[in-house]
Length: 254
Image 1 (tube, rainbow, N blue to C red):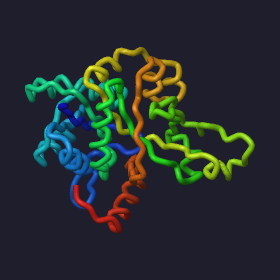
Image 2: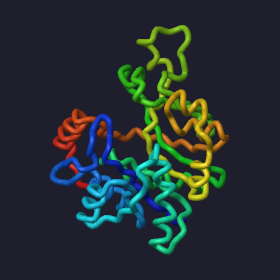
Image 3: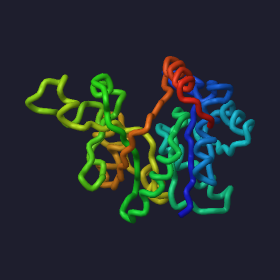
């Protein structure tokens, strides 16, 4: 099975413009992500619309493909990048891993596990979750929650707390039920990826501002795997400070 890793990266960010280029221990965040992904996959490229990011990637010897300024999501950017990569490499991908460009400490074992989800011939998409351990995360709308079937399929994604724990005070909810946080990593069968972009925006997607609900509304099978690993996403300058402090106590290299 041929797996391509694609890292969507854009310069314009409402909360942290230029964040792919910020430095962690002397390396840009995009370099951290790229080098970790390259430990797992032979074919990895950054998909961007910005020449500054492209120049950074080329500078550390990485592969980059230029994509449109108009994409609304990383999935759309991956869908444009895929045929460009296939043409460049002269190979057809079976699976595409969409690797978050703002998670410099991505667990390489988790990337392997995502790719292995497609041993299930019915799986079209795969993603990852981890248990929620704090009330702050549980009630934070930026922490996306997901409910999962007994067989490991995603049922629904929400910014609200799901499920509702009836008969208990909110302070007790974490003791009554295991809630799951969506980590934002996606993997797709290559043909499914190209098909996702053809779906019209849906009601549940627009309401929650979560594109994965569009896929569920169109009956896509999203396989979910669980991890207890630390996921550090850098969305703001404050997150960068926290990441630098985390590295002081958890030394690692890209």
